[in-house]
Image 1: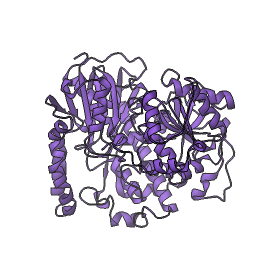
Image 2: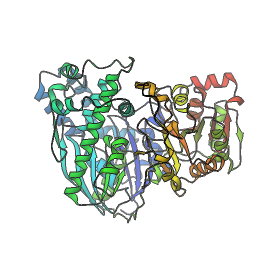
Image 3: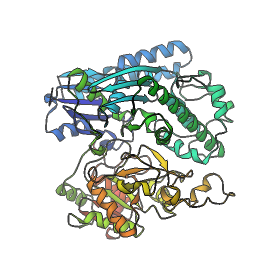
Length: 607
């Protein structure tokens, strides 16, 4: 099957997505939420699949196969066995989940054939962690590598160790439900008052403000850890097997009180809980990685699964772990399962050979989503009531650099949309990292989120070592690394504690420097992201600084923008100073109050 088309699908849990392969080339990939504007949309990804097919210019009937990223019957088996094991506890949960499984998730074939407008071809299934492993290895820059996947739970597996060589992928070991590092982390996410399956980022960001005073309690009461990284969780403290909560009253007593109300203030307890479980997470990941290295004797590691998005743990693994090189799939969560499922079908079912990668991954800088030409952008801006000026082809980068130098916050919309949870210079909000108050300004007036949330820098690849202790490329923001000693400033007052420490000036680039003098870095190479590289170069020429703040183009509770209309709507409802979409510059002072109000209140949906 040297050029056949395979469509991978992930759906019906959270963050559904579609990915189209031609041979082993990724034609397109996108999450459904970007089209429907429903955060984490779990429904069948009909819009994402339609986009993928349109990108290739083919109807669904020309697909060689559609492959689903897990096996619903095996997952339902785990659900039933779990409920029987804990009965009669969990009856309420089963009453809610059972009908949903019977109606929707057990009828995946019907949903796929309906969602793809009567597709009648092959329908294949992979296992959940096999999809994760394939998404990690097949697009990686390695011709052979160890593979590590860690998440909440798939069918039964919660973590796997494997090996990839050429077109062959083999899973060697697995950890099984209910023992799960992902679910342990989510339990603390829930207890700290954040939403499971999305608030884990917040918990990771909160961790540096706390002390690890609960680590001993976790190891003494919750976690029995083996030398190889395997562990058992004491289920007496959790309720996720059959309840409607992640934790229970015994957990409350162990950790000094009930879960924080989501709208309540953050106390030192939540900061300490975050710090403690983050340390445990890092320790477990390092121990599993060490065992993986001993088992495989390979120098390179590929990672996927939700826990692989813990960039702090990844940074420690890169610095302290046994592997020479670590590559993390940028769409490591369930959305990336669509990508992995398609690769499993291509290589294992159809026998597609794998080409030599020679140190370069095949993710196309994760720029795999929709792109809009000049005419389409102009039409959407006009329809939205935007006033704009058009600049020549070389102008957008210079305009952006000049405005960022002036202290303005710029919405940047160029080229194909990113696949995965990170904005990487295509659907980004950009600002000056040197400005002391920029973190607070972005959180309060742009993102409308908690003030402690950190931001990431995007830096010219060739100058990354001037600002960060980094030797390897980090194009996908999957690693947190130390800020260079030469760029650090003395610590602030010892009398400032808790979240007030956000205002401390810790380096020459305070807007992206975490409390512990680290940053989640994106290195930008000319050959991978030429336009974004030109922007950073223009900013460096003006200021001497080769980096900017780069945060996703969205606000709290919304997906990253997909279309020019989405971008203008987000611009209108925030304090973003300017929007640059293709060759069009939209300045706030050019807009009328009525056009901003209308665009800001509009619901951009493709349902």
